[in-house]
Length: 572
Image 1 (cartoon, rainbow, N blue to C red):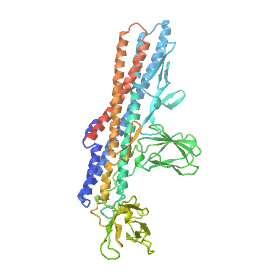
Image 2 (cartoon, rainbow, N blue to C red):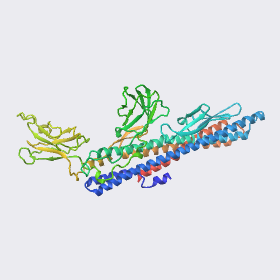
Image 3 (cartoon, rainbow, N blue to C red):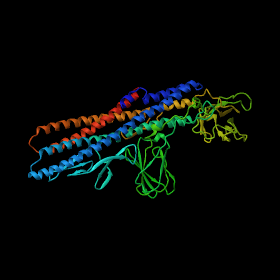
Image 4 (tube, rainbow, N blue to C red):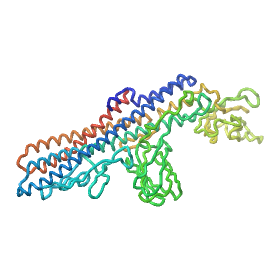
């Protein structure tokens, strides 16, 4: 079903990204055209749908993986119960026969162990009474003679959408997910941790990347209604999870500060007591020390593009889990419904005015570039609704032409120095309090020449902001993570890294599987050729290689389908 859904040409993410940017360019070519804007609105909605569709494949795969883990633990328990009964029967048979081996029961036990080894990594320890103790994971005693522990699954504390493996014996229940390896369940856990979770995180990173960058530029523009732009896409929300064992009532919230610094990783925040916390990046173990200084609520500086707000002093050992990008591809939505709301125009424009002294158009060769804004503070311009720059050789009016520059009326007022004798090739200026606007003055103005920066009223034909949004496609805006190394990437390259990473892991799993398959076959042949000797060593080897084979096969089973899905998506 997954292959069929993702093979559909309507699913691919890369084509949807390309179609979105193509439509943005079409609008830039004819910004006053409502039909071209309607196409962009449609492609924006299609892009959102693609994120949802692809994220749903990850979600469905996780649900299916959870079910498989539950089914496998049930099978492990059934086999363990049978091993306990067979152990008891072997001990009783040896005692009744005076020490003779009950071969049928021994064969039955070996078959059960072979079945168990398909599902989980295990070790066996023969006992003097003829029974075998069976250990799984990293020393968990599943079968001790006729006494049997159990395994099961339950929702993870860090992420309720996935399952942890729980081991229960006479000492109680505990999580052993990180200690499980080999066999089908080890393969599922490896796939989830190495492919599924990083892949969904990377998909979310791409969703955040395009949403936040496009939104940021859209907010700096003017729409066809003559008002400043509003968000095209929704912004993601991050909901940290408190560990169920926390003893304090402290809560943690998180928000995205800079999408360009985000990683495709989860994080754990742990209280060190008092004012101290440690944030651990889970994909590579890097830690960040946090000292709140005792002031609450406390908001951290940006860490990997995220800020955390801690409500109070947590108890030593309290933990919180943060997944900045995991749900972003699911959360992204379209926020505008009217094609006129796309902010294709810039909010300000420059025009030459009449010379203050002659009443004619500017006489000199001076020029002022169109201003570029970085925020919308004090925009649109009001009271007055324009800023006038008038060039004077004696800008301070002291009667000496030794301080050339512009008198500024409106906006920040005052004067700015500009000497054509040394700066005619271009000098940059900033009015920080007015949209952070920057502009360049060049050439040689004549005395009294004026330039006016004004609101871009009736700017239907202006495409400057649309061009800026279209240019985002080619800009390095994200940290695309592959093999634990962060590298600057475009939005589409960041998605390509997801595809290549899944492909690399799939190829490695196939190599491991082929190697394990060969060893397994060789030892099966060796075992079948031996007669009348102690088979314990050969059986143990057989079990070991069977575990490796099953684990690799399980990774291939799920990773290969995901790789084919994603590869097909970017080729459409």
